[in-house]
Each structure stands twice: as C-alpha cells, then as structure tokens.
Length: 98
Image (cartoon, rainbow, N blue to C red):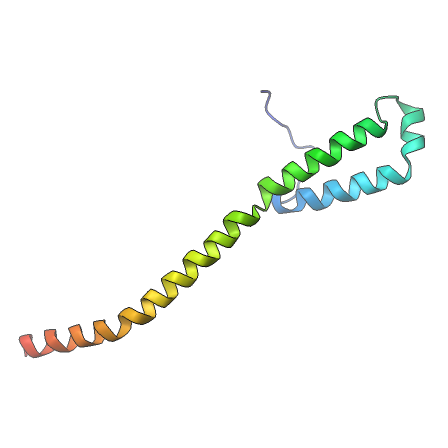
C-alpha cells in the first residue's frame, strides 16, 4: 500500500468531520461534479460515505471507549477500597518501627 500524503494539516479527530462536510457539500452540487468528470457520480458518493463510516469507526472507536470507562471506574473503586487497608498498614508499620 502506498503511503498517504496529507495535503492539508488537521488533527486526526477532525478527519470525519471534514470528510462529512466535504461530502455533504458535494452532494448538493453532484450534477456539477458529474458534468466536470463522470467519475464523480452517485456510486462515488456511496463509496465515499462507506469510507467515511470506516474512518469514523477507526478514529472514534465507541466500543473501546466504553470499555475504557468501565476499566477506569473499576480502578477508582478499587483504589477507594484500598485506602482504608493502607491506613491500617501504615499504623502497623509505625508501631513496629517506633
């Protein structure tokens, strides 16, 4: 696969938004684009919309984000539960040393 060369600068999170804007703008003027080149037809729009959905899934993976939220919630609850045990351990160590 050939490397992709960016022709403009943007953050990766902005790609789906920019792509959606471009496709919606193109949809409004599809007749003009088709008159310019027959490559830009309804089939092109269908393929481009499918590619945009794939890019959105790669850039903003909803399942991974949801799993990360569950993991972070579990970590915070475990840290809160350990706090009391650590306090007791600190007291035992202070009594043993002092």
